[in-house]
Image (cartoon, rainbow, N blue to C red; front, top):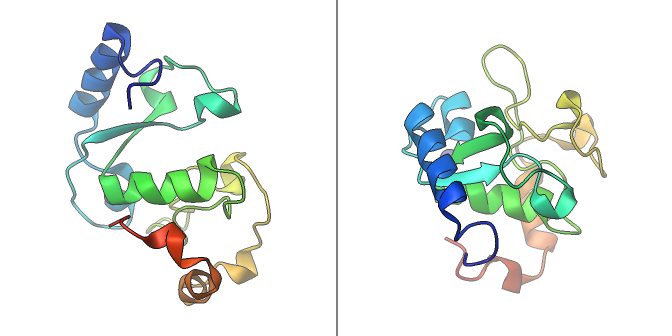
Length: 134
Ligand SMILES: [Zn+2]
């Protein structure tokens, strides 16, 4: 967490502003869950060329569970590319990184994005990926 830019006063002010503007976890909120956010995520990670200090719309308030899911699926190499399967009440994908919004499309096909898929995929992954994550 000490990695740039997270130790800078500019990031701390930006993070504070984002959490004040959006105090709830945004992915949880879209799925009808009210969860306090304590993490501010870059929608496009810095490693993928996103700005370190984007506008508030370039950031996402998240709870730790959602942040871990997004980091695993989207920000790390080899992830599925979709952190939050499913759609909100309006029919739009819950995941802001979903290819529908112009995000990474790597390996994503809607037919595989059914609720049971998560269990299948988890069972086929190495156990070490899940140790201590929750
Ligand atoms: Zn959440």
